[in-house]
Length: 319
Image 1: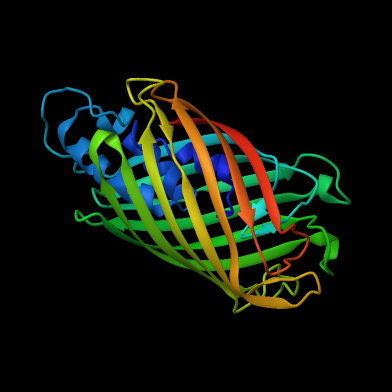
Image 2 (image 1 turned 180 degrees about the vertical axis):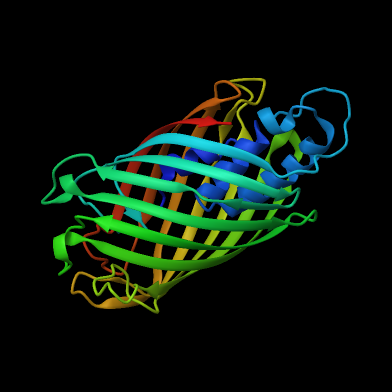
């Protein structure tokens, strides 16, 4: 699953102020763990006081019942469009955008623990060399534990499958990538429904299975992402808090992870980027998101301009 921004799907996640379960599913799905942590705390409170909290994610008025004793499962499905495929500061398919589908089931093991498997399948929008045939399937498994103090800790694994990836010496452009990650974050609720979030996530590349000799990422390389964000209800648009503004910024560091234009793997301050998503929770199930994002990098990264902007949108369903 791409932490790039894949922001269309990421932006969809930022609905935390409206529906705690939706925010949790989406936030974990896009590795926006600081929002996931806040949503997980909200979920635990909701699950203990509402007869239909698990079904709807809403803290509705209902007779108080004992906390659920069996695990609860939720599901996010979304269709996403990104005008540019940015992944960790690199413009992967320069000249074309990306269409993707997310299918993210979540198992709420306890009130403070969750495992999410956010499957992500993407295709290039149009022809760009052989990019029109580009496809990708990501299979992540993410675990998150949230403390009542607002801190959270998590770990995960992702298997990336690339089909018809432009460039390189891979047969048919195919590539495999194995990655593990650890994350820590903190979330604090303020007045008027505003939540501030911070996180620090470290990714490490394991290389490829023995039968593959054409992995896409340098084995032993790593990537560090400090992130700051917020969830802000736009009550002047919808007084019920169903429209939220969810800005996020990152200053990323690469450790021989990305190559430059000369093909040399580089280390240092990889890129600075921000995302400006707005989400409308249309109903308990349906939500829509639009976003604009920007990235600046000074390492002369492969196939990537120094200063780039892009946009996208998503339509999602949560159950």
